[in-house]
Image (cartoon, rainbow, N blue to C red):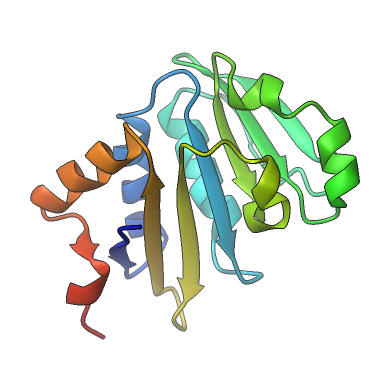
Length: 165
């Protein structure tokens, strides 16, 4: 699977990638986020929500598991599955979200890997110290592969093997 890298020097860079990706979204988009605590998953999620027209404050649904928002472009389904077992996640009927009319963003997505749709954009956030982050994007299926190629051609992303530290 191809991997692409985005380097963020601060929160505004992370938000810029989220906004650029959001401009490509369509109904049924699934973004699978992972990374260490404090790596910026919620910050990324908030930037996505803002970019698709979700008004107000978007915070992590750590204890509610799923929060639904009405954006001006799409419904936004924000999930945090950190505290769920696979069995609990399976009982939630996540397919209704993944294959619905909205955009689904899952924090800690690797914990429910088997339940995620095969076509999705997986993003791993690495904390590099201070405000710096490295985001590793792994597209699975179209349109995600096309999005990453387009962002690479525009200079926003690099191939993983081209990345310099």
